[in-house]
Image (cartoon, rainbow, N blue to C red; front, side, top):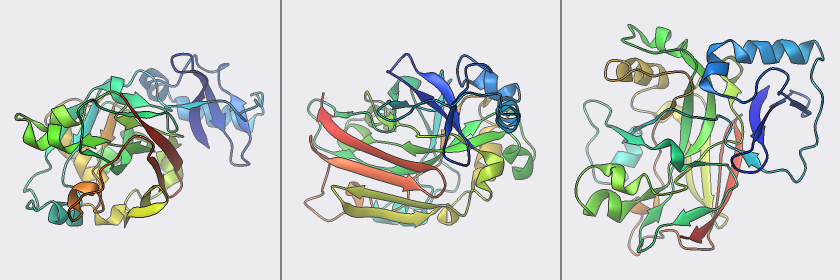
Length: 284
């Protein structure tokens, strides 16, 4: 089962995709897939409604797929969480997970156009496992307790502008918060249907050329420990998104001339069991 949202940007309607590939209207249960819905046993209620055949099938062909969660409260991101990515960028493995924030208005759908910022010369790609919180996480005592706060998992594309991020002073936020810089989706897959979050393959291609190919088993700090760690610095609430870092293969880590993204480039990314994304890059 996968949760998704369909329709024009700003007017998406909630839906659920069953294991047989048929998509059903979820509006009898909720007006949208939000943190409140997830916290109120929304996944279990959607599963029960599917089993009872209480939902009506809908046509999805030709319909835009939006980000699978609405009204995300905050996006918490982890840097340098794959050893090979730290090595390719020439940075040491951090003693503790570096954390930065992205604004929720960077989120777009999985096939929406991504805009290269004006004056940008170093726009880069990053496939990441996204973690959607379903239960308040605050001062957690163990990784096991932390995983119980996870509603599900999603593909998250942490698009980055490296000059803004690294060369323009201050924190990383300048290169992370440009408009459209966080495509999300296509689906939110419930945590209990994903299984081990540390056994998922991640892949990304640019104009058909493979650039990233790794596994979440290579994370420096695994998902459960990340959520536990973060809960001691800020409260994670239902509907919040945690981007867990990217593996090696980004443009920043390539030899000169680095193949940064340009208008017209097509980026495709996928994670085992979570679907795929495809974005064409345009100019802001």
